[in-house]
Length: 143
Image (cartoon, rainbow, N blue to C red):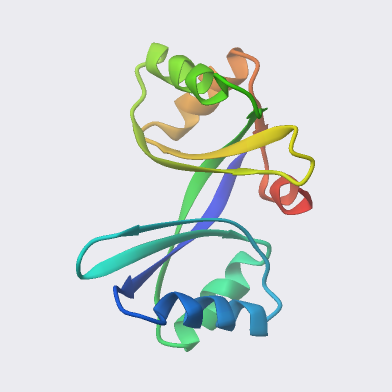
């Protein structure tokens, strides 16, 4: 149920994000979800892609510093309170959210929330117990 995510560290300067997306496009790697966090000096680009190992390899070959972590993808109805319900479940389980981002799938009926939790396995257990759907990377790539 854990989804592999790549994290790319980049200088906070014009064109770096374009370079990364060009490298992925040239290698026929599809980005399914992303998040960018930045400071004055650097940024972290978090990506869920259809070909994780290939993306990691081609980005490293092009001079980028790349890491890999796992996240949890939670599908919720794309309506008011969807995120609040997930966070209530996690709060009740006494689990800390390290970071999150979201995207809406093509049908527009559901949203997918991507989470990195302090206690990943406990989070999966709590979410499933409360009836939330946890997606695999393959399911995300099909959206």
